[in-house]
Length: 152
Image (cartoon, rainbow, N blue to C red; front, side, top):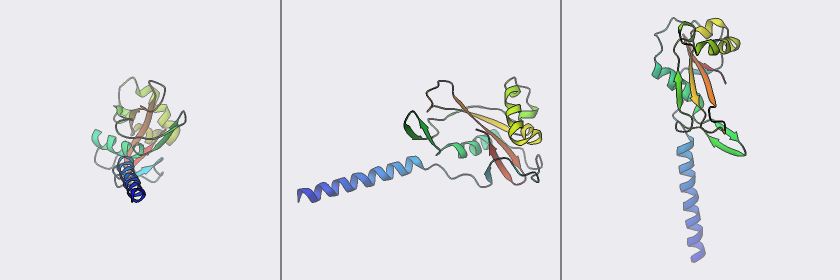
């Protein structure tokens, strides 16, 4: 009888651990119309309603939260808590902020100047890295075919 209770207790503990792992590992589903990579050449830029800061953060976060990382032998899943938003710059090519001088060429190399200048970079603090000031940059651009996220 004791062994059956022990097995039942282990089974319940495994179910609870699996439920907790599943709830913390799953993030909100990616918003509809979010694509990863550069938009196709046929996608039109600047013909939709302007993008908001909240929308840019939501789209960029959808591609970061839930990603698995490996640092120094540890495997961890990114969450909103361990990868918080550090900064958002709207419309990179039209902004008059000093930090855009470094970000615009990076975006241009990846997707071309037309896409880069209409992109909004979101900088996330990499709380899982052993480097104190590690940053992850995601560029978000809105087209007539939805939002596109690119960058490393």
